[in-house]
Amino acid sequence: MKDLTQGSIGRHLAAMALPIAAGMVFQTLYFLVDLYFVSGLGPVSLAGVSAAGNVTFVVFAATQVLNIGTMALIAHAAGRKDRAEAGRVFNQGALLAALLAVATLAAGYPFARLYMGTLGADPAVTAAGIRYLDWFLPNLALQFPVAVMGAALRGTGIVKPTMLVQAFTVLLNALLAPVLIAGWGTGHALGVAGAGLASSGAIAVGTGMLAYYFLKLESFVRFDARALRPDFAAWRRILGVGLPAGGEFALMFVYMGLIYWIVRRFGAEAQAGFGVGMRVMQSLFLPAMAVAFAAGPIVGQNYAAGHPARVRRTFATAVLVTTLIMVPLTLLCRWRGGVFVAVFAGHGAALEVGTQFLRTIALNFVASGCVFACSAVFQGLGNTMPAVLSSAGRIVSFALPALWLASRPDFTLAELWYTSVASMTLQAVASLWLVRREFARRLPAASAHHAAAA
Image (cartoon, rainbow, N blue to C red):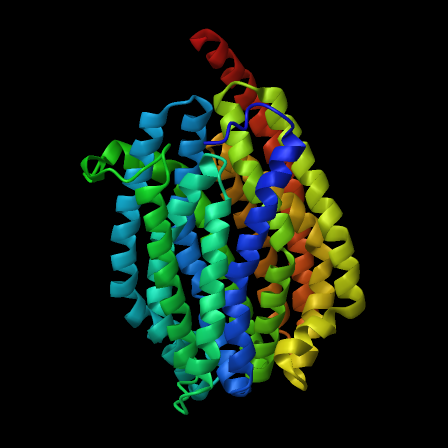
């Protein structure tokens, strides 16, 4: 365990954010590697995989329930130096992860067909998306145990083992992708099915590596067979923190699904261009997201230890750093956004749509960084409901005008992108106000409670 209640907050933030950023880069490379090789199969396959990739938001929403709930409670236990409580939370989180992995496989296959049948621009796109998901679903199921193990380490201030495992799995995926997708060396190209199979095989190896680390090397939190019996009180605590955080990601799925549904009237190439633009944007967000992921356990440990000044300082530092990251990225995308999109979209309508999307959506990068920092505070404090409220407000402020605009005969995609920028700006303002309210409510009480316990 690493004690985050002492020492420089800036140094803690940097020490954790850099490995987290590297790990997130490797995680994103899963999709970019697949996207690169799938793009060679044509716009239909690219549109199918792009639309199918949106399903990951559903699973990520569910994994965030365990990720944030486990991280916050273990960070609080680490702040109090309560090893027994940390172990109890970890093992109950692992049990929940196993149950959710099985549920994902059981429900995923019929859901994939319903989902792609709704969003596919044409039957060929729908079929490509279904083929991809049939082989990608094991990857999604294994995200649950990976999320719990990574969250447990992050809550204790340890992030490098997760990053190293992610790096290895991405390398493995990059080696498997051309073999399985394009048939390099075998002559048997599996197409989009190979993209899903490569990712699933790589994550299976990574899951085994993390499990080995906890069995052989980790000391503060470990697997304990005696603690794997269902503890419904622990489940309620994990879900109490995690469910709102998962709801935040579920709302992102709704947001993405709505855009895909609106864009489909412009054809498969427009859907492919939007999908590529979104992937590029998410990749560019990784440094700012890494700062937010690092800020969460720092806030959590200091909140549990009764250090309100350090909690406020962590938030201020996170907002400053994310802003410094997002400003140059905004300028870069406004100037040369099409260069990133061209790597995956090639030419034609897909390139045009993806470039227009990225250049416009760059206007909300700074606001997005503020939202990331605010969400980290809510997670660290153990109350993620404000993050859901701000996300829900964004969905409403985007969906209503977007649907009205889409009903007009002269509707253009540029109007959709500017509507998204406006809704994100409103969310940032709401999130900052909610953080201020949480500080006023929780920090004085936490300080008083810690003083009384001391």
